[in-house]
Length: 211
Image 1 (cartoon, one colour):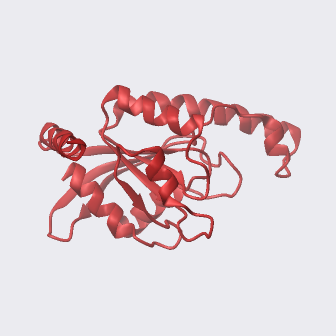
Image 2: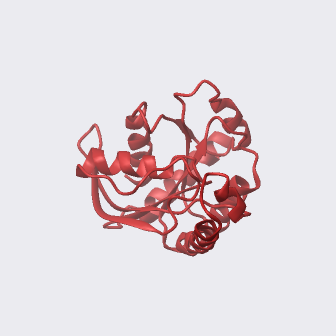
């Protein structure tokens, strides 16, 4: 019964949006989940260029990054054209002292914290613009976090189609079963954006929702 209802809801979303000329797809998640790495992988594969800078320091992306006219092709020859939106990492608390631990001086750390806080607010505002959201989870981390639950809750409240991506599957601590248990209402795609592993499955999953 659940699977039937799940498939029905997906069909309704497809029927609602099938006449859209261009989707707006957002990439959301906690800091350092791999959002920009996924955005870069998509843009590199379909445009031949990257979208943003990747860093091991949290909140490297502090402003919305937008790439328009991304056209993806499915295995059966269909095309999906969309605007890709890479958003700053969502966090419930941003402390400038955390940036100082990465080697920043106090002035720079405080400015980064201020920009990161502004970025979180902008990310939430942009939710209302989205036709589909890729929620990126770090598969090496516990998925039961306030941030992840907040993101999923906001999407459910807005009835926005969701694709959950378990990233960093190339790492030994990765455990997709924890993510599947945390969010059983969604299909989970397991990838390594860094290595490109299973990225084709991500693309096919996007087509399944938006195509």
